[in-house]
Image 1 (tube, rainbow, N blue to C red):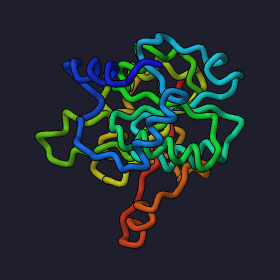
Image 2 (image 1 turned 180 degrees about the horizontal axis):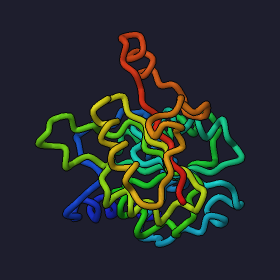
Image 3 (image 1 turned 180 degrees about the vertical axis):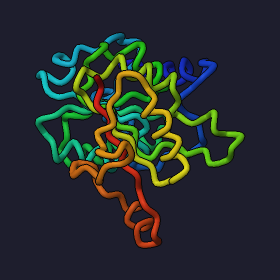
Image 4 (image 1 turned 90 degrees about the vertical axis):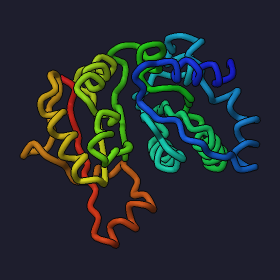
Length: 234
């Protein structure tokens, strides 16, 4: 595999990105995991469109998580569903290192990682109509009005994502920021080719396969709710 710095440089050159790069230091453990495990589990845009059977050695349901943070939830989902395969996309190197540590601790072989912008991963690496599920869990809400244009969930982005989810596949979005949930529902309920799986066109109960994060538990204790939204690709 090539070094992911090339992928990140390509991502930073985009006029519109699905992320904002923030500084963050690698811990010694994260760096060690990166050095040892990235060559095995890291993917590069330079490798082109993936062959899922070659990548994982089988044909299994394929999940893509965009912006997995420190990777705890992704590792838990992959461990709970060994019959499924997962691709995680994250630009922050410490998060990639943390996920690699989790993968090693849990003995997981059904996750691969990109350190790149999600739009580049979709357009350059993911076959169209190949994803059984796309997950966007707790994206940056950009609460200030002047920053709303930076929010990931926008009509153009979900239209692009639609091409890569198979018919009948799912898009799962979760947020703990109520105004962002309202924005997401407004965008998604008007997006062509998606069906809201909520009976009333709003949110659904937390799916059993989405882990309850420590952050979420703290928020619930303070009365902060989480909105899970599930959409089927038509």
